[in-house]
Length: 148
Image 1 (cartoon, one colour):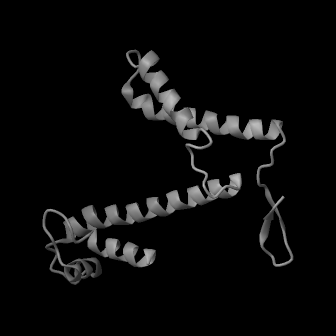
Image 2: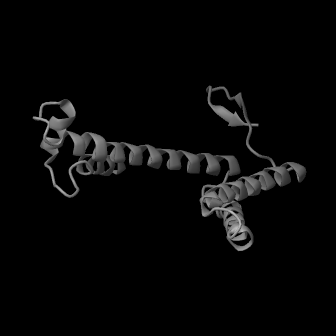
Image 3: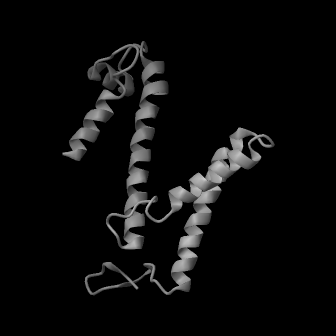
C-alpha cells in the first residue's frame, strides 16, 4: 500500500506545478520524445525535487530504524533520548547569548553541535553505567547478524 502511494506521488510530483502537465507528457519529456517544450520545467525543476524528496524520506526512515534498533525500543525517537532537546538548548543558547555577536547563519551548526553533544552524552553514560548498546559483531546459525 505504501509503495503504491510513493509511486503515485512520484508520478504526480513532476506533473503538478504552475503549469499542470499530464503524466504522459512528463514521461515523454524524461525519455526525450517531447519537442523540448517542457524540458527545463520537468528535468531541471520538478524531477530533481521529487527524486530528492524520495531519497530524503528513505534516509529518514532508515535513520529512525537504526535508532530504534540500537536502543532496542520500537517507540524510540530522537526526542525520547534527548537529541532534540540538546539541539534546542544549543539553538536557544546561541540566539540568547551569541545572537548579536555572530551571524544567524551559524544557528544550524550550533543546533547540530548540541544534538551531537546530547548523543555523545547518551552513549558515554550508557557505557559508564554498563547499559548495553547493540554492537553487531556476531552471526547466529542462520547467518543473521545478532547483537552482542
